[in-house]
Image 1 (cartoon, rainbow, N blue to C red):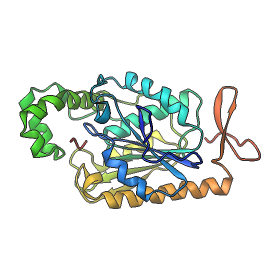
Image 2: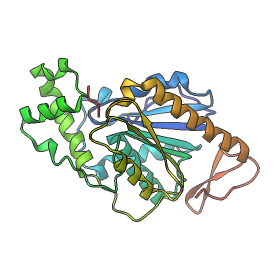
Image 3: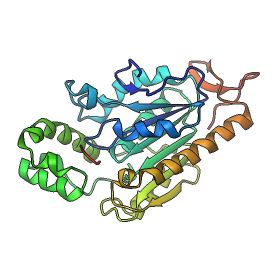
Image 4: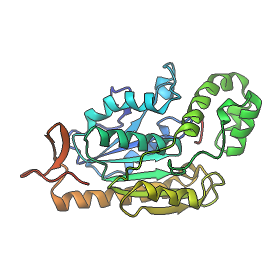
Length: 284
C-alpha cells in the first residue's frame, strides 16, 4: 500500500501508462473500489482517494467545505500527474472529482483521458434535498434509512452512530452546498452512470452533466437504486474496464502516456519522441 495519506494504492506501478483515481460516496471509504484492482489491465494503477476523517484517517479533522478539501488534496494529486489519468467518482465523489478537475485545469495541468461520474446530479444543478445535515439526530437517521445505504446494524447501534454522525453530516454538507457555477466546459470524454431506480438522481439530473463538457457525454444506466455501485458492482466494473481499455487504445495509437513535459509552467502530454499539443452515498 502507498504511504500517501490521500491516496491508497493497492499496487504501486512505476511504469503505469494510465492512473485511475476513485472517489467514494458520502460516508464511504476506499473499500468500495479495492476489488477493481484485480480487474484492471497491468499498465493501469489504481489510486483510491482517502478523505480526512474517513477510513484510516478517521482521527483527522473532517472537511465540510469543498474549497478547503480540494486545496489540500491538490497538493498531493499534482505529484501523481506523471502520466495520463482517469477520474471516477460515485455520488459525492463525483462532485469532489469535478472540483479537483477544475482546479487542475486552472493550474495548467492536462485534463483526464476520461471522466466518469456515477450516481450524481450534475454539479450545475442545486441540491433538491435541502440541508439534511442540519436535521436533528433522529430525523437525520430517518433520512439515512430511506436512502437505503446505511446498514441497520449501524443505524440501530447508538454508540456507533454517535461516532459516525459527524462524518455523515460533514459529507452531506459538502454534497448539499457544492455547485459548479463556472462557465467553463471540459474538453475531455465523459461517461455518466445512473441507477434505473434511483429516486434521488433522475435522468434529467444525469443529462445535465452535458453542460459540463464540450464533447458528447455518454449516459449509462444500471439496474438498482442510488447504490447500484454496490448492488451490481460487477456490471459497473465491466463498464469502467471498457472505458479504461478505450483510453489505453487511444494512448497507444497516439504514442502518448510515457512522459509528461512542462511548457511555461504547465503540464502537457508528450510522446516519447516529440512534444504533443496539450489535449484539449452509501454509508458504512
